[in-house]
Amino acid sequence: MLVTTKEMFEKSMKEHFAIGAFNVNNMEIIQGIVDAAAEEKSPVILQASASAIKYARINYLMKMVEAAVEEHPEVPIALHLDHGVFTIVKRCFEDGRNHSLASVYKGNRFRCERRYDV
Image 1 (tube, rainbow, N blue to C red):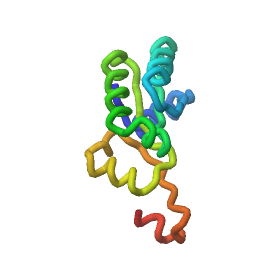
Image 2: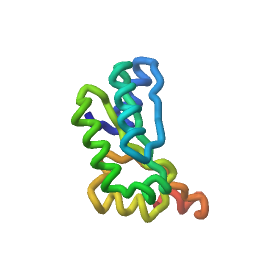
Image 3: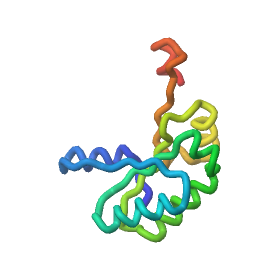
């Protein structure tokens, strides 16, 4: 099942366990990670970097993650944009993917007060 990292972290903090986060950029990597998570009965975070999105394209990555969720509905899966750039974060929100996509946005070029406005 596709969940948010917030849900995942609340459970892990309460029950005292760690969650693996793995960068993905193709089908074989996603299959291997999610199959292993299912075998271990463990939640998992699949991360996509800006370069992975450029390589595989966001629509393909999302469809592969959706296939993993369908194949392993028992596995809590979160999708994370790993250090995304503003244009990718904006596109994810515009495409309606914000419900399943946690994001770390590097706003380092802004002064501290400005980062909170992003």
